[in-house]
Length: 356
Ligand SMILES: [Zn+2]
Figure (cartoon, rainbow, N blue to C red):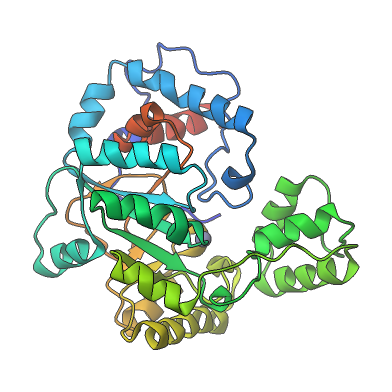
């Protein structure tokens, strides 16, 4: 999966070990592939016990001697948080309370203004974003954000708006569990299935999905999606709406025409629904694609967001490649702190390199 080419990350993130962290015992089972640039099929379906285990892994980092250093450095960076919906509204509320206390929540407009005027955002700036925009963004996130006056941005998959179609990765998972078969897939463990689908050329992914649909014993449950009216309600409530393509393919697996169609199709639909063209885009699966960036520039997009689990500069140096931190509404506030400081992301990268 393509990762960010951003060069604006914490300098400690490369091969160098983290002083003070190396001395601490790495938690058992800290998987090197834990971060794959997105949470599709992972976070949402995680069992509560597993979620607790994940949190336990991250929580001990707050005792690391370098955490105050990371926190001080993070104050001079831009943190863009990438959520995928809200499954635990109490925990999400606690995270927002934390942001109110420790950070400076900023809007998409403020980021755009900073880029336009070449003026850095204030210290401790944090932008809250949601990818895929399931209904929980409207039902859970919006009230919590509104109560605290925190702005946010939701990146939507345009062809799902106003439908009851599930996300394709949920659908594939369900179909494979209910007898679905596809020629180019060995329907083994669901996590492998998704990885294989994402690794295929996009026409093969679409064909495999079709084969799964016609061979499965059951149809997947419907998933009520946001409507055009919901998008307006979100925008009016302080949640800006951005483009996340038409159908959420992995752009790196698509041909040039499909990359263009996926972005322009969503752009036209969003412009029609919102009455104005969107100015921000989030790369599906978080991977930067230079062909996508060209199309975005042609359409007048000013901001593009990755899912590379990094902090970025307070004045984005590559506005169409802005780093984001992966978070989950179930994340404990203690672990949330270590993500926000950049320590947990740096530790993950260090671990990945250490085991490579
Ligand atoms: Zn997405």
